[in-house]
Structures are given as C-alpha cells and as structure tokens.
Image (cartoon, rainbow, N blue to C red; front, side, top):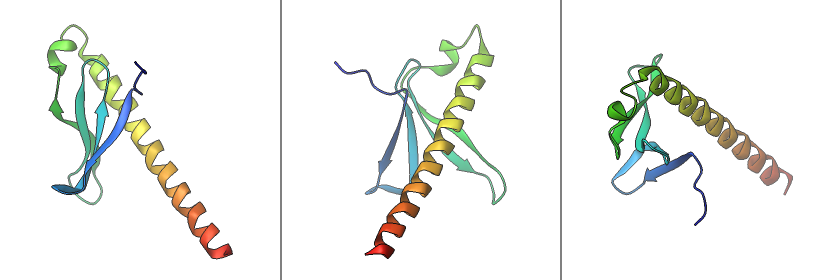
Length: 96
C-alpha cells in the first residue's frame, strides 16, 4: 500500500462549499480547517478527531502545538502554490 502524505486537502463542494479541510493522515488522525474570527485574525484549528488528539499528546502537549504549527505552514504554502498556479494559467490564457 502506498504511503499517504502527512497532510491532505479535503473539501465537500456539495454540502459545505465554503470550507476547505486539512486531513492529518498519521496518528493522531484529525481534520482541521482555517478559522476566521474576524478580518484580521485567523488560525488553523482541529474540527474533528478520528483519534483522540489530547490523549495522544497527554505526556507532551507542546508537541500538539508544534504539529499544528507545521500544519499551518504546510497549508499556507499550499495556498501560495494555488495562487502561483492560477497566475501561470492566466498568463498562458493571455498568450493564446
């Protein structure tokens, strides 16, 4: 069986088109998403646990914070990649 990437994007355009989720495929498995409190404050937070995250990190809660920081870095890198890809497609369309 192929090894899954550590983080994967998941969306549900039919029942939840406004949200994009990040799935952490390794233990502890969970779904997270970008939460916007207002126009200036947003963060990544766990919204559904497949495995109990707090129990998994009970002896090292700082590792949970580190994992969420890595997830956030990955997500924002993904968002930058999407923007670059869209820009490149627009340039190609303009050339035709």
